[in-house]
Length: 453
Image (cartoon, rainbow, N blue to C red; front, side, top):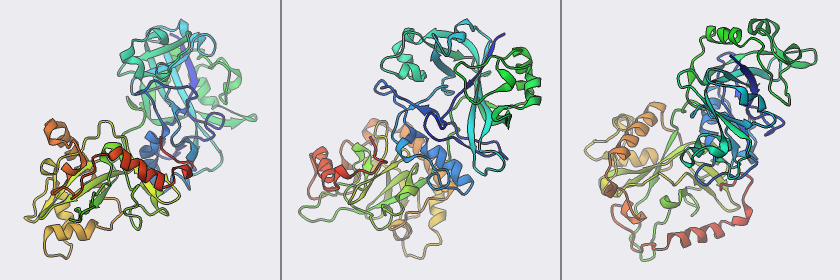
């Protein structure tokens, strides 16, 4: 058996930040280094995809990802080099230099990953060095030989031009994965971070002097891989086939008004088909308040469209990210794979008989002092920008996902006016042009540094 110890994850040299971790619970967020090369279309991975995970982690400890964790805003829309990718159990490296030793590896050998993590409540040390994952090798292939339908499995094959010498390590399912909780292995001694002496002895040693783990040109080898693996299994750490556990859904209900029956009323926003909301300046005093917009990073929007005696859920977005312009704010989400319902086919939030596809919504509205159920709903959500309770959000997320999965294609809208009980007097037939007009009005040249792609 052969085994290698590889440092991964964002740090002060690559990304100028460190992933957050809690020393007590040993929970952490896996955040990769930045990607410096172009990626194949459809294979891109960006840091904004991690915002929900970071937001969930921060909120669990009553922290804010911007003020407390100091996540670099400039990274938000940057590409990330997601390697290793624990979802696919792969790791890529340069087989000519840094990862040249891996070319000798075969089935059953080990690639062990550690990271320098930033404690959320620092005490005596500024960094925690911990093991965060392991791959038990199944096979090793050259990146250039990977078939097109598997390019999305690793950061090196996601690149438009991967190196001729790049190799991809594929792991054995069930034996490989991300550590659910990190295993602390490091301490600061002799002016450097090193593996703790007792752990180094338990492993049988490393091919570097005195367990040095700050950074090295080539990853160290385990001198006694069998001994290390025996130690690792004794830790009884759970391995998961995910880069980060899926966070609990955070949802805000967006109360949409019905179009006024006036000649020029188009009722353009939200722009469902472009994955954006707020560019028209609506909800500026509550949901889209520029002073509070950051709190919506990673939140899902539940668009509630009213009718005469009911409210329907037109769309539940993927996690949103915000854009600040000089004159307004905008919330954006991934439009691909996010269909929106026709009004008559959309899930029912509430009707005046007190029925809903989401029973917890009914319970939530019982105490609202209004005469009808739709009035209760409007009173509760018309100007609200608060997150739904976790149990209500979970029910909406699970049931909406199931309803989408089971819906027929004719249940989804082909244009925005099909999402309304009664279409506006003037239908906007050139939505792209209208959207661009609002962008120009918002002063597109005045993007803040957190602009979306």
